[in-house]
Length: 545
Image: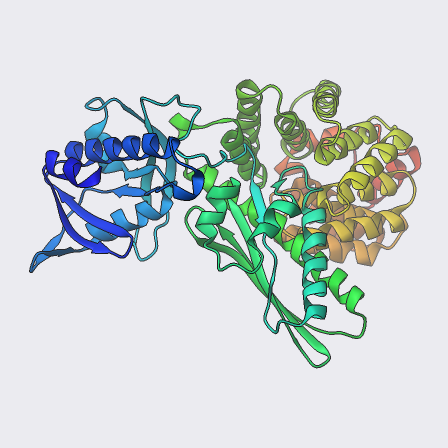
C-alpha cells in the first residue's frame, strides 16, 4: 500500500526508524496527497480485519530547510515533522501551518486548527492543524479514539508501586480512587472513571497514547515508594497532546496513620491540580486566534480578563462571557461568569444603576442553576446574588448545596464566608474565607476574598487586624478601590487621622461612583448596624457626606 504511493507522488524514503519512516518530497501537495491516500487505504483495509490485526500509522508533515549529508537529511525541518507525527492520532495526519497554507484549496481535505503547540527541542511554538479526509464526515475521525470533551478532561492513572509491596498497592490504589472521586466533584472538569484508568495498571505507558485512547487533554501519573516508616509520593500532571509537564510535586510523610496520610496527600494533590489545569486552559485559550474562538475559549478568555482587576479588563471579561452565551446558550459557565463580571464592574468601577445590575446578575445566576443544577460554581454564584438581596437564609442554603456537590470548591468557601460575615457571624465567616484562600491562592476573586477578610476583622471591632489585612490586600490588588474605603474606616476608628484621610481620598478618587453606591446609601446585604458602623469609621477618617 505504501511504497507504490510514495513512488507515484515522487517521494523518497530517506530511512526507516524501527516502525517509522522518514520520507522526503519535492512538493507539499505531493506529500499531503500521498499521506491522505495511504491513510485512507490503510483504514479501508483495517475495516475488514479484526482489531488485533489493524496497522495504524501517525503522519506528521512539515515544510522547512534541511541539511543533506550522505543521503540522510537533518535540521529543524525534520525535527518539526517528527514532533508533529507524535501529535497526530493513530490513522491521522498532523501538519504545520506552512503545509496547511500551501495545500488549502488544492486538495479535497479539510483542516482542524489545533492552535500553537510547544514542540520538544523546538525554540518557538508551531501552529498546527489536524487533517480530516473528505471521504469521511467531519464528525468522524480517521481514528476510533473518542473526541476531546468541550471542557478540560483528565485521566488519573494507577500510581506505580516502586517496591512491589501488596500493602503499598493498597495505599496507592486507595489514594488514586480518592483523587478521582474528588476531582469528579469539580464542575469544570471531565474526569475519566476508575475502571478505564486502571486498564493501564502495570503497563509502561505513553501519556500521548493515553490521551488519545481515553479522549483526555491531561494525564496525572505518579509513584509510591515506602521506606521504613516513611512514604514518598510523587505526582505529575502532563498535557497529553504535547507531552508538556503542567505541574509536579513530591510528598514525603511519616506513616503513623496510613489512612490519615492517604487523605492528606489526596487533598494536597487535588487542591493543586484544578488551579493548574485552569491556568493551562487559559493560556491555551489566549493563544487561540480570535477567528477560530469557540464557547470554551471565549469563557477562558473571560476568566483571564476577569482576574486582572482593571476597568478595561472587566469590560472585556463581560464581552467574552456574553460571547460564550451567544456561542453556547446551554453552557451554564457563561451565565455565571457574566454575573460575576457585572458585579465586579459595579463594585470597583461602577457607574451603572446598582438595582438594575443586581436584578440582571440575579437572573443570570438563576439561569445558570436552571441549566445545570449540579454546577457547584453556578450555585455559589446564585448564593452570592441571594445574599446581595439580603436573603441570608436562601444564600446559606444555596452555598451549602454547592459545597455538598464540590467540597473543595474555593469559590464556594469564599461565598460561604461572605454570607456568614454579613449575616452577623464574622469570625465563622473569616474561617471560611481563609479556607477559600488556602484552597486556591490564585483565584480570580482573591481581591474580593482579601477584602472580605478585612471586613471580618472590622465588624467585630478588631481594627488593628483589619488595617493589617487591608494593607496586605492592597499590596496584592492596588486597583481594588473598596479596600481603601475599609482601610480608611479602620484607621479612623483607631484615631490615625492623617493615614485615614489619605486612604479615604484614594477610595473616592479611584472610583467615585462606587464610593457613592456603597456609602451614601445602604446596600441590601449590609445590616443597618454594620452600615452605621462603617459610616462611623469613615466620618472619623474625615468624610463629611
